[in-house]
Image (cartoon, rainbow, N blue to C red; front, side):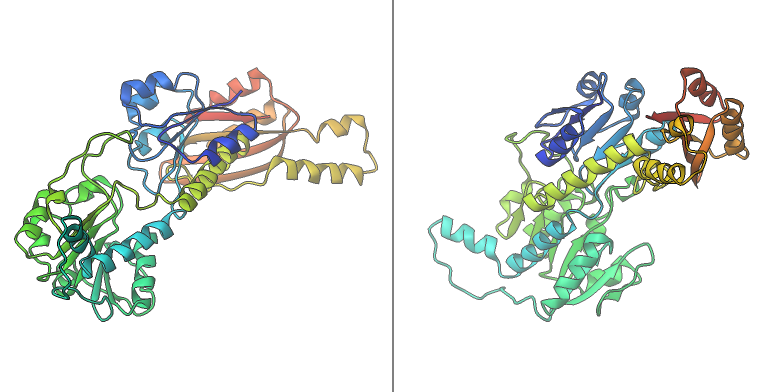
Length: 423
């Protein structure tokens, strides 16, 4: 029986789906450290994590039975992607499932900060009636600067413009401007004209400490700042100083450089001392709708990889979307039923065994694979190949079944990384 381990309170729809397919699924509420994870992965085929569990090379090397890792999140920086790829472990994520949830929180943060909702709320809690329009503004007509114009940043752009904001953005990659958004040539240019700045960059290591004193000092007087992307990309102390001095009028922070692993753990930050600040515990994508969608999407991707060999939308292996074996079997049955030579022996050939072969992208490996299969008198029904950088991935459907000796012969092909047989 295939065994799956799902950590960090992943939505129950993921476990329900895998169990419905006959998998043995274990779930846990919190994250695990490296040693705990290695121990927990004994005999596990599929691992599901969110953002707090780090799947390091040491973890993957210690647990060779793992075939796929599902990141039930947008980011994948918690997994050593290169090591996983070189050891035939597919990694999947949910790049679109919670973009709407994050966007909605960003927009609500912008409005709340410009209307000074956190500060007014604090006054009421302290039994003070401070009815004033001082420093409170509409968002209409203000300029929003978006740093990182990907799946989330572009959605923020559309809704902000619908609210009457002027939108400018900066991205290191060439991106199509949506609506009336204007691309800036540099972060400096964006910061000097933006009344609100929101970060939506990915979790690559080069983004560590991306936004610090240099860029905070370039922001407009009384601008508001939001980070709902990655905690390690900003200098929290620099942000605190610019809020404390009155240079910035407010901030919303959903992610932090160091975060607790378990719900209920104690957490402190100097930003809590500032009145007009919104602090949320990494819940940008944590709506019931988003978490359900993520649970469904990633669990299906892991299942399709393990049972069909599909790597579509894998973040670290060549992407290959192959027809299901059931469809191939029906096609063969139709061919045999229309054949004049149809008999009991040919009926056996409608049995399909699928074998996937991940290998170093070297010339001649596909020919070697086919030669090995031919030498074993194995009839190839269909075959699909994808290559990317230094990796090649081929999925082959074979009429009939494979013996252990057949599989061993395929594994001996030079350059082979991992062979997976799907009966």
